[in-house]
Length: 202
Image (cartoon, one colour):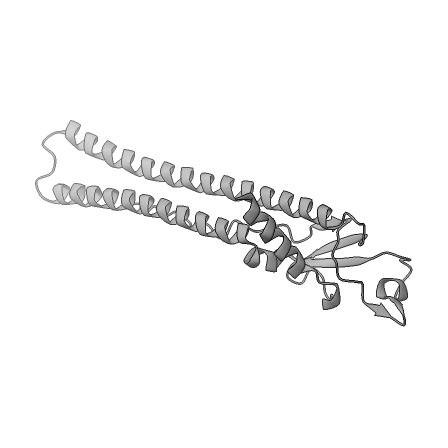
């Protein structure tokens, strides 16, 4: 009957899809040139296609809204884990008392024995239900933040590219892009702009 409860600690709720492509995005840095013309024109059949990219992994660690959300979710996860651990300790103590009584005098009647068993089962069920409830709450909050972050990024990129400087900007995460010339990286600009807008919104 003895069972341990555990609430898995939630990781940072900031895992955005690595394959996000942000079309019609922009930056202020002129496109690098090769032989007097933009690389995008010199190296392919793209015509005047202008491209850039944002390092999503860097956004996760540099955007203030991400840092604050990570701190908030980790604190909540720790509180939930402590609550579940408290339930587990209460169950373990009750189980130890039950086992000790069974090894000594036992219960005076079948009804009292069954009542003690039922109490243990109820405590075990309550602990499992609490663990499931907390995990679901954390998951929902993580998903809600991810959606909010995605919307904020999309809206900022549209505003940044209101002059139509870039035709497309890609999201670089891990090794989903095998190689990207740092000259096309506008991550720092996006981080600075989004952080500034975030502070104004608070």
